[in-house]
Image (cartoon, rainbow over all chains, first blue to last red):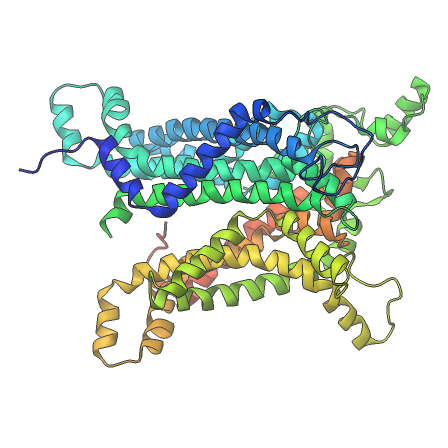
Length: 282
Length: 312
């Protein structure tokens, strides 16, 4: 008989073997540190307007200043908070909602399943980006609104994956075993099946973080963010107006968005490789 | 499905706050009688259900409504701009589909090899890069610093009148925005095609084909690729369906005179009928693309023609 390893240890071992997974996890950890302590380490105020607009990178302002003389590096540092907040909260909300709905659809089956999947299908036909832009434009900018819109538009994806996983796990023998012990159906679903089905859902959730960060940046780029919130996308929107004179307003914030989204996508891929039972067997 | 989209499109633009009358009247303080008159003129004082009914009835006759801001029917406005979007997106999507599959075949030949890692990396980069940033960088490098290619618009202001000159001018303007669009869709297609082919490579029929003494080339292109096409067709169809959405950011950066730019200006103007019209068009495009995709399944896979289509 083989000794059972704890799921946590197996997971960490799997992650350690995946070099890109480790690298992206480290980069994300770095971003979290910047988000938490960056403002303490770097004295610049991202909203302080100075009389030194459009300074080239170097000198007193490492990454230059924008059209209102604000320090670009300070804006980038504060921007980490917005991107991580939007990305993580939206992905968390979408994952929780999608998992619950998908799990119920998969486990209950019948017309409940059909109805829920029809709704999810409907959401997937929707041109999500257009819908997001319209909703935010009409409701007015606001971080929580952006989060809500992203969550609203991404839960169906999670629901599909969760449903598939619940269907797979609920056919396994141990479920019938638990049922024989007299455990209620709800406890079987939430206590036994879901914990065994969350792997692919978590991997997808990580990918949604990247997607949400990209969407928030796109909305801010189009000018759909409040002026008192420092967002990477908004700096790029300013850079669009000064493309011919101030390249640093485009290059640095874009690099920040790109590397962050890439890190989450790589981590999501790595998690998918580790946590997805179907791929692990192959 | 389509009815649902129509209703959602109508509702989001009418229920959410933001009054188009404010835009029509302007910032100048107007007497309330005038505001009421404008409201009545455009039928904005009718009950919501009446407005919806009128909208649907008009839609059935091909009337998408009237743009308050442009003082022009929405349909003609959209048709004016659709050509430019198609000229941007269709060549890019075709290029991305063909190159994406070719790259995937190369990568799948030796999974885990140097070529595979490189191509997987490139496609991940294409997947993660904000398209509007890529667009800006291209402009800074190729238009501003090097001055090789035009940065804005679809034609030069001094458009040559002869046929070939126009095409050349368009091609020159297409290079940068077209590249931006291609990179993203290429990444998507290559990713899906690669993983689909890798799954197929482990199947028994591949072993049989190799045992028959077929060249690796024939095995990959004729047997593996053909059998991996369903997910690839799905993702290509999906790309075409969502091409309107994909055009928005690229068109904005390059001032390409298509539907994407129209959409962005309509937001600033709170031009509801145009927004609803573009939303509707985008959603219908997705539904149509799905339909064509389903038909193509049958062409790619004979089993679909016989069996009930039970492809997840």
